[in-house]
Amino acid sequence: MKFLIDMPLSQDLAAWLRAQGHDAVHAIELSLDAAAILARAKQENRTIVTADLDYPRLLALAQERESSLILFRDGNWGEATIIARMEEGMQRITPADLARRIIVVDRGRIRMRRLPVSPGSD
Image 1 (spheres, rainbow, N blue to C red):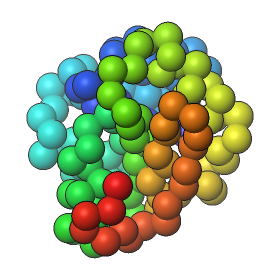
Image 2 (cartoon, rainbow, N blue to C red):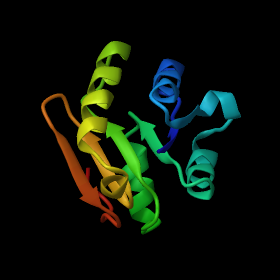
Image 3 (cartoon, rainbow, N blue to C red):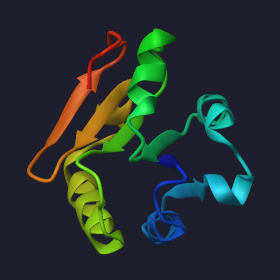
């Protein structure tokens, strides 16, 4: 799978994903700002991994149907916790599950929502 890790998350997550055999880059490595992240991810067919709650809104406003997003919610995730939850999710989520969806990772559960979503959701 291909991932683009957003600024709020550590570059170590990208390194961990690469060690697991995935194609992962961090926005810092590409010198991307938030506006460019969506375009680059779509262009390269990458799933954005973020803790920024603006992304679901941006996807909803654009009525985006082709992107995919993994969103860590409930703030202040430690690096080890993010990697552990990502590992747990990767065991349950197939590439087909990820396509055209928002995966919301909360402390107690992982939810999937199909795109497009309506503005104001999540």
